[in-house]
Length: 372
Image 1 (cartoon, rainbow, N blue to C red):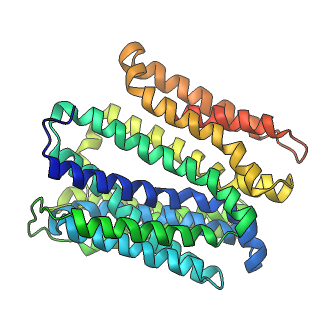
Image 2 (spheres, rainbow, N blue to C red):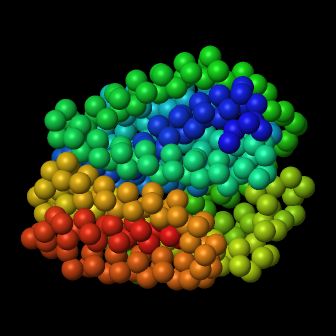
């Protein structure tokens, strides 16, 4: 199966897969600790959720820069700098003394993930034959989907037994391991070039992503018509529109916007954006509801989410097969229905809702997201 790929390339790809999987776990594992963070730092639910939201915001800013990073820097430099950034961020989260220090640590973790995740895919496409892309991307997708689920499962246990900060002590240890692996095995250069960085595009991307996420985050504390909601969203949308407009006129853009001329591609991206918005919103709210309102433990939160995670992995893997058999339209429609049913069922949750009912609801929701 791997005969057409050089062994030294496979070793590098394997190391990147491991690092990407471990760093990916840090994105969602903190959600199981939100109630504990609120209690320890005397923070509101909105402020505590910023430990999760800031991760997504940072991803939105850093991911578009990968066109520049992948062309400008060597693989070894990218790997070592991202894993080192992850270790420093995890250390800061472990020793955090307030929400500000925790959020800054989460920014460093997100910077690492926002670089290594797309960079791994770029390396994959560079070193593997085109006819094996689907297989390797499938392996990559399963690894990225499975480790966060496993992390949330173990995270609940660690939080209840050892405290939420020890999640980050484990990340420090795992980060040190992948850092050493990189020093030993990542030695090949995949080629670099003098690719310019458009600062104006970076600024527009940052303001746009920050404004939209900040505005939607404020909905939990202010009314939908509040200026603290509408103004950041409006500024964010305008900046994002200016960002996309600028990508069309500069010689070497951060992202290739010409693909959006394809109607089906644009519709697909819109569906994924809406689905991702719903997925991440509920991912942050479920632990707060289960622990803060229903009064369950962090372990119970993990058990509620775990079946859904398995459903996500299974249907992520089956997606290409189902698309080939019945067509992309039917798969997307079925995924949308599952996603809608999963979210509608959550409207009826109360403090007395049985754990099994919440778990089934999450399973339906995750299956829908996996199919999309």
